[in-house]
Image (tube, rainbow, N blue to C red):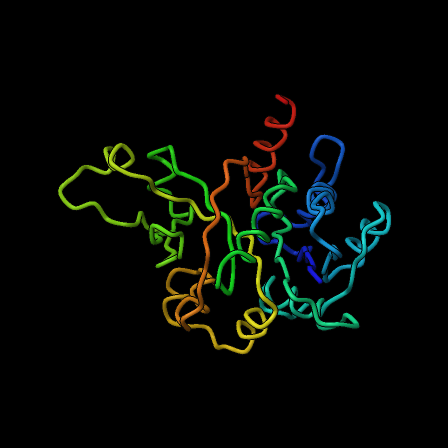
Length: 247
């Protein structure tokens, strides 16, 4: 069984109530859920929340939802709590960020196929960086990987560092990759993640995926050209609205 879980917290610091923000006639959580529900390889899609208002919105759109402990420390913990409440253990669990309203179903299909075709513990999407601004932006998470797509390291810094060249020229010399925060876990890898204590480099970078990577987990990067605009601020929401109006 393959399960998609959308963690959705109401109390976001920079955009309170962001799962319910209107994006051209649909709430953000509805857009994410519809993108996930369109994936033919997912057997179940669950919204995992901490707030009755999001539960009500899930009921309105016909989505399956579960209440989870509001004190859980992360979306990954919320994801694990949701699958632990199920009657049977899934084989693969996809942690689908609730702030990715442009999610397209084929991205999840590609992740599942990428995980099943490899010995990886986790598959995660990456997209090629084309902008020097994005390369330098610490809010854009970068990943360095092997030629076969196995992640070596995730960072908010531009990696790998290209010695002897101005950063403006780095993108002309080779590909740099942006990490999209969606994860297809084998169940054992998800269980392993929540059993581990946060690591020093995870805390330094503020990147939760470094916990499993530091423990030796195999992350398979799956390239995508699909557009993504993560929503953390009102300005991000405006960018999504502009994108949708231009379609």
